[in-house]
Length: 153
Image (cartoon, rainbow, N blue to C red; front, side, top):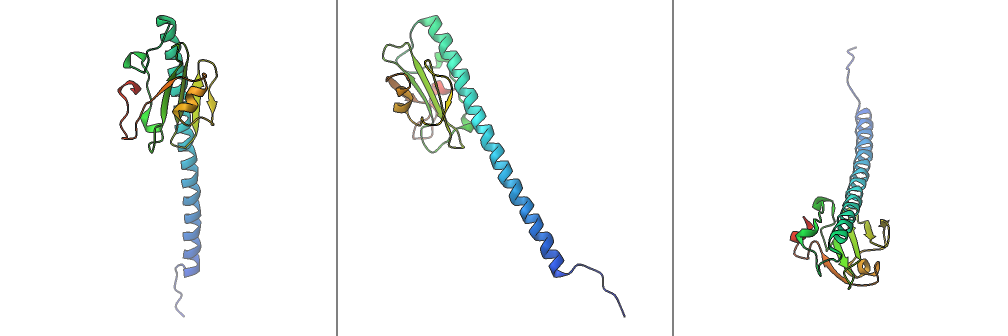
């Protein structure tokens, strides 16, 4: 009797299922790592920009009425959520306080101000950003037309 060698259909199906499970696990892990990278980038932007604003204030004693390129603000644009305004700057009416907020592609909001340390969540717009310093006027780094403001680097 002649013996045929090879895989049965059941063995092939088991291998395909195992490969599919491993691929699904890899995709989920990759997305989680990517979201962490976005969040870390936005947090870094918030901290760096806050330091720049503190230096600017110490040299000029007041902020301009709206953001300008002279402030040196920068945003790592690829890390921010793009379906709405996502990077805010607010100055108090007397020009001595600032607040910043940003929303990463993961959907997590971050904020920092001259009065508060970096915080996660709870801030997702210009008015909420200004509330961190008791009000003021805000500007968005990227408008609804998906164009970034020149001052946002």
